[in-house]
Length: 392
Image (cartoon, rainbow, N blue to C red):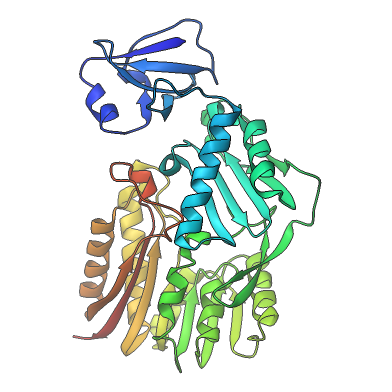
């Protein structure tokens, strides 16, 4: 087996369970190692750390798949890992739609698999996991006999691994516009053209959390994408719902979703720049009982964190000013680079500057099919907060 030997001062983090080996942590590496190869990783004093795939071209040179020196990385390994991931989801009640594999949290680094009923969407975001894509597809076929498998590898991070971006079928072609069920509702999802894998499963539990506060309420939803939160609001008894998104394609899908659920008389959608419109509506003194904000990630890199904090503060300040006294702000952040404590501080700063007092109703992460592993910050990324907003 090819070997990687770590420097003396870096083994502690890896021994504690972190699966990434950075290039500057390596003391020695076999010359025969090529991108996608499997290697054993040892401490400087020859203690086994783990076995994983390698990419000398990447800053993250190795990613650990197993800590068991007797476990062979082969097709059976991936079949067993997928079975274990599926059993975990079933025990939690995620049987129809779920994130079947959540990368490092399922000990399958940089592999994402979303299950939409009988359809699956795969992302292989590192060279080492991409090499095993045929085995992963075989495992899916063995466990599920799916109607279709699609890959969404049109992701820039692949280029850091020396791979190209692409997307396409990993099964016989099928209609990529599928219909899924969630919380008693139905939604269209386009697994080929939609964002990420076509549908945001990570908020499926959080969408139920608005059920009481939206009853008989006038609701505004900004950055609504395909309208899932807004249609839930209509379903849970909102008096009126207005969703905003800058994408014409997203607004068209949101309108179709509202019609699909017989809620198009309550839920309306507008193609606008939410940043600009919210600012204007604050000036005009418009008010809603519930304002929901689900903006895209403001921080893709660590260098953008301060700018992201400013953005989150400003958009939440505007949201609070649009809430009637005693109403509610529902707000999310989807970047792991802004940790939960920092996000709560940003909301507090926004409330202070907006001259509002707030009371926390609930603060949650992503749904449990996206498990959080202590020490792996990229698994703890979604913040979902509901606060009651009142005048000072």
